[in-house]
Length: 190
Figure 1 (spheres, rainbow, N blue to C red):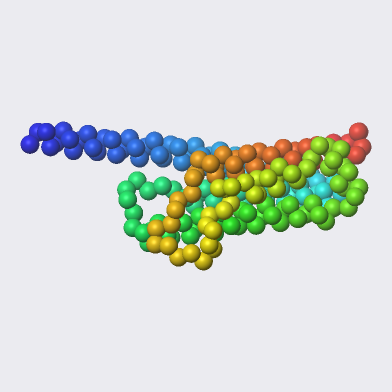
Figure 2 (figure 1 turned 45 degrees about the vertical axis):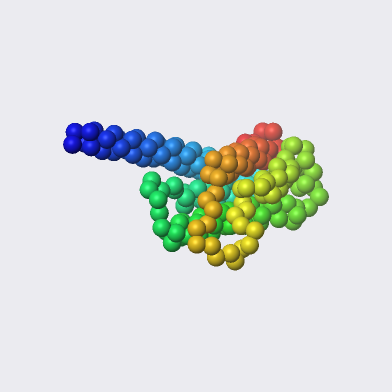
């Protein structure tokens, strides 16, 4: 009888430790994503042309959209039903699709820039290349080969890989925005 109590207490302690470490990891990940998606210092885009100002404003919105998908995914502590997993995967898929669409629409803003604005970006060393690479990097924004696939137990995303890539893209967006907002036409005005 005492061995059963000891084993039960050990299993309970192991499950509690596993839950606590998962919660700490999830909270740390969400804190970092929130910090990366926060608004900047409220810097004005008035000194930029209309196209570049829109590019800077939309970069803030895209950072927020990229932080959203990982808040929809949480690994369960115990095995779950296929229907529960399907609901979690559907919410994650919608969020990752929205993030992909936001990044794609932001990249389309580059095509609307006139030649002078593109030269300004080139002079600042800014390019849409890293963001196109992030958009098409395998395993980040893709979820299924068949969009209409109705499987009972869908494959879970590789959260560590997705988090690392979204984090890298958000840092690049923040650097892009900071470089663009730091550009001044008049050296006497800031």
